[in-house]
Amino acid sequence: MGYCSGRCTLIFICGMQLVCVLERQIFDFLGYQWAPILANFVHIIIVILGLFGTIQYRPRYVTGYAVWLVLWVTWNVFVICFYLEAGDLSKETDLILTFNISMHRSWWMENGPGCMVTSVTPAPDWAPEDHRYITVSGCFLDYQYIEVAHSSLQIVLALAGFIYACYVVRCITEEEDSFDFIGGFDSYGYQGPQKTSHLQLQPMYMQIPLDNN
Image (cartoon, rainbow, N blue to C red; front, side, top):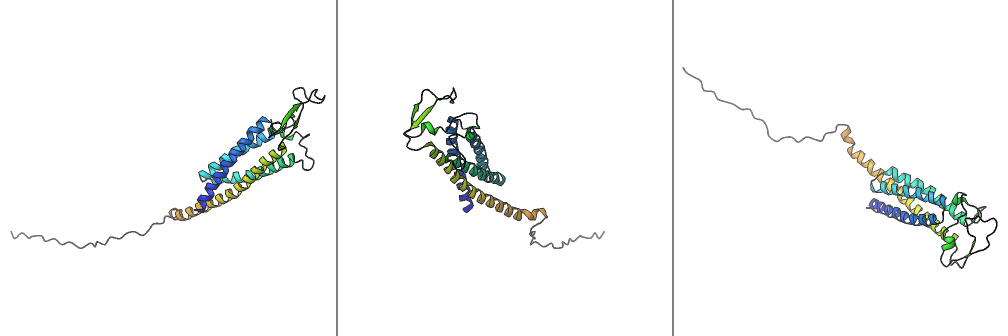
């Protein structure tokens, strides 16, 4: 019963991860955040493999999924530090998330709840010609905190998934070991006791008539 509930819980966690990361992927595409897009894509593939391994009792797939979750947590911790500008990181000047190929920011910067976008004209000389120079005001929640909330949710789901993945792998391994032990007698040619017949063979006598002639 415990293994079944743990396996079902892991399936539910994988489903939640897929839903949340697909939602995040959409907004990263809208904001041209290429590094998160690539990380989200890899995460989707591995979560699907982990889900397949959980359903089909494949411990290697679940183990790979658990290892990836460690890297996924590390990535999301970095994203949180980036938007909170921990250390020397700066969300305003660093273009790490776009691989330094564009000046786009998070989609939530202009489209957050209550945000009002105002175009500034004329644009500064340093602004690229294909970009508009804007100011954003009136946001109920700044975009960096929305991104931090997304990453924090991913960390919580990843930690839960890691715990249950380890539990499921242990249960599958123990179950396989018990099956090997039960079926191990076959490899040594073990045969169960044979049923003996209760019938006993009795000698048979036949009388042959003699011919007097």
